[in-house]
Length: 265
Image (cartoon, rainbow, N blue to C red):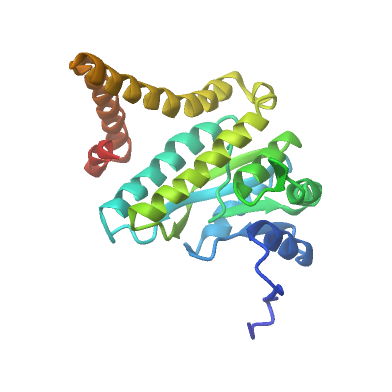
């Protein structure tokens, strides 16, 4: 706080992440705005890695690669670390091929100030079911960027280590909050998707339908077991095979055998 290069803003009360972000952005002056979550440590070269991507005026935001800072705490944190690798190096990396990363994650994302300035009012005034929205900030701001015609990018060499839940209860609550954001903002952005790319549209729709179809499969299997006394072995083997194939491909790409264990996740 004594460093003259930093200006610490103390808000009179906890107003939530969105309003705190907006207050800081409006009081800052740089051409680029770097958003970092409080539980995140950045690699020393993150800014040097992100800035070159922002030299293209069409890029509104660029995110770095996330890792679990407390990866070695438990079996759960190890699985989450692998989940982050997949989310960044499969999902975000694929979407970046079309210049449309659908969610630039808060722990490490750089925004263009001129793009933010034109979107802050929309960002601040988002309502959901008649109430001011208090979740899904990162995804919503990314969707606003894409709707405004800016590209969003992913930079795998910009590494950020963030603390992840090490107990199942907090993890499930976090996942539920993120799932609500994903389904809500995908629904709000359905008209946007075809304007970006048809393959990207297929990918995002598939990401949303996949978990629902899997849940339906499990419920159907339980109903079959209860009503007929027989287990749907073929369907179960198909799900296991798909899981193992995917995890094997990832283990090959990452050159890390630990991803074979991700099938448990």
